[in-house]
Image 1 (tube, rainbow, N blue to C red):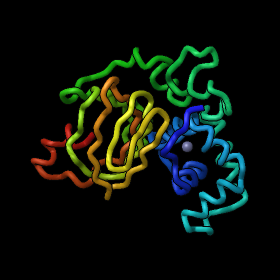
Image 2 (tube, rainbow, N blue to C red):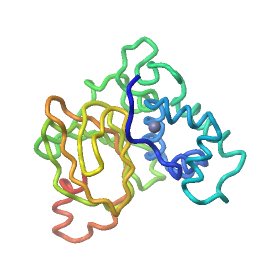
Image 3 (cartoon, rainbow, N blue to C red):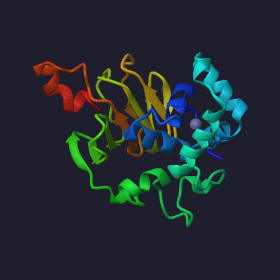
Length: 223
Ligand SMILES: [Zn+2]
């Protein structure tokens, strides 16, 4: 079994369970859950999840219904469809490299994604979600060895690696690992040599980059 090193934190799981995350963020959370037997197991074993929830420090948010709602969300989003088997990540027939919660948006195959080049070595595929949200959901395909400029984020950002790997100040992120960043984190990801890194990313609408030069930089910095 693949060992993942970067997981969802209790606050994100709680918000997902209670429906507090918008669609873009929910899709990324469900994608991690589909690829991570540890988080699914934690979700099922109430005590362990309780431990993670309690790390958040807000016991008031905990209720007996939290665990039920979490399991319901996991089922609704298809993240638990093939729970506890290697098939969580791949189709039941082993032919898909797209996790189940993402398949309804991008189809069953990463190689059929219609990428658009946005910067040297960086390709992007925007995913249409409901217009009721100001967050955006997109996939990135970053060339081997490519480093992004050091940057912060205009708002919260959460990403899950689907294939390949990158490293930054927080460590190595391989398939299934989740990067749950808030606006205060500045990082400089660098994709490992050998293979492109494909990620699914949700970001809040940028609030920080308002100026003219910042907007010029947005296509680069905004990744
Ligand atoms: Zn996990």
